Image 1: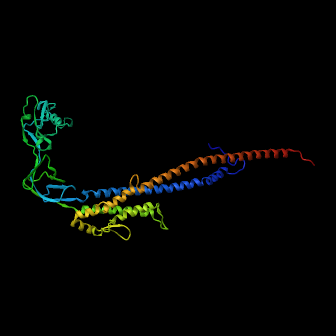
Image 2: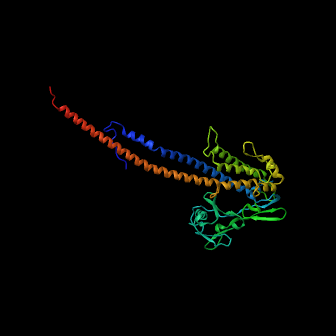
Image 3: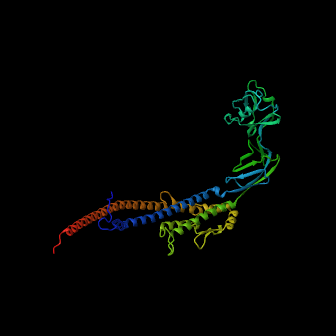
Length: 442
């Protein structure tokens, strides 16, 4: 606990300021520790940022090592109302697709017109039979058309239907009910639950049906919707609602070198971005010095990533458009890469992904070696930096206690000094008054 001081009571000096100046001198060692800690925190932040970037590079390279990365295809169709999409599992090829019919929902349009709020116009219990083998559902109404519409549309009843009251005259409405899903399996009937009679005098029914297409000359495929997922592996065909029956579309699936080129360019850009960051953090010029200047471990990460351009088997990737420039960056000639890929996509994929020699495989190995959560070069450096910061924290805390004790001692000393001086001043004043009171002789 600090001791109170009486600044300048006896000496007239600003002893509080004097103590502060002494403390500044005493705290010089702690200040140096704090400066070192601040610098180490900057190093830690830079290492963590680089580690994150290297880990992202490893992930990007890992994605490009997957076969799907080199199997991108584009799907084109001669008929706009027959949409085709393809995933990386699709193989190049072509075939024709004829639209035999589109999928429609089951719909009933009831013949009797009634008011929506007139009581007794519909049964109080209406039976819904979905005709799919499930147990019929009895819907409770208030005896009005509006109540029946509400019961059919109530989500709690889970009817799978949509009901609408269509106005056909003054306070005259007809009931239209349609299955929410398309397909032949969506058929249903609505009857009076009491006697099984047709609801509202019966209905004009449009039967639900599945969509159907013919692939090639004789392969027939059906779907309850207008979408045929994986009609062939990796290919999905969707018929637009207005697709005309009998329309034939020619579908072509072709390799997409542009997509593969874009993926490789993304990796090259990520490599160059990492190299630029490392160069900025480790620069040692006389005018500017990076936070990680002189860090051999970080420079080794740069060298291992950049050396991935060279397969290590005496060959070169220059014919694929991949090489380094005079500034130490990786460059990709996209035109040269596309040309090589068009000529032999399998060979290009092998040269990029082959274990030990492939450009992408070597980048992933270098990135994993730097960012591995246990043994990575950067991970180890981060662990060491954290340990250094912890030691400096302990040293700073120890100095906090030492300085507090020193401040207390100085305060006590100066307080004692002021008290003693104050007593001496009091005694001097008393003596002076006594001497002045003595009689004077002639």
